[in-house]
Amino acid sequence: MEGANRMDIRSDRQKGLSYTEIARKYNIDPRTAKKYAESEARPVYSLSATKPSKLDPYKEQITVWLEEAPYSAERILEKIQEQGFEGGHSIVREYVRNKKEQLDEKATVRFETMPGLQGQMDWAFFEDHTVPEDGKLKKLYCFLFILGYSRTRYIEFVTDMSTNTLIRCHANAFRYLGGYPEEILYDNMKQVVIKRLLKQEDSTLNRQFEDFAGFYGFKPCAVPAIPRPDKG
Image 1: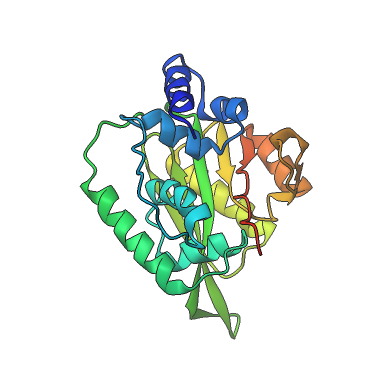
Image 2 (image 1 turned 180 degrees about the vertical axis):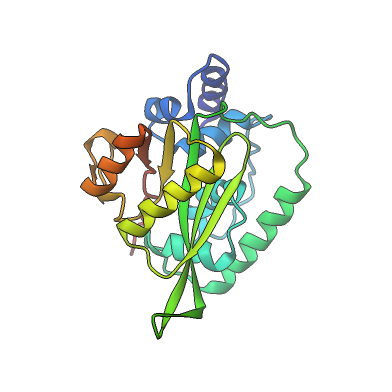
């Protein structure tokens, strides 16, 4: 994104626009809008040529994810493979390790979402772990919910990722947190979005989950998918 647009985004945020409104205005991910709004400096451009990497189209989004939650390299790999990444584990592991070190060293003043405005939910999958349930060994998953302003988190371990389980975990999270935000961001999960289109309002939500969100009064927001890299 050009420096001028970054400045416009910061200006819009200071005027009171939400990250969702900014994302719609510039056709970008709300979390990317948040990143640019928080940026203290214009991007630095290098004249030296670098060797292209299969990971390049995903690096910016990976950074946004790591700023939102301490995802493991394995979880990051799963998320970008869902979007078409065809590279190996090592390049992802190295990039995530370096990026986490950079984020740990970062000591800048951050702009946050307004209290009660936004939250984010995602699944984690523990590939090498199973737990006994009803006399059977079942896979282990983790429901992760994060509030955008306070960074307060709710985590619940489950043995399936069905819509019923998703709804139950949300209700448990709301009770634990004492409330819920106006809007909640979701990644690529069919329990929430059956058909994802470019515009949020054109996407088709899971009817059962849509009814649940309507009962509580929060807005489910489908995060735009990362563009697939060109092949050839």
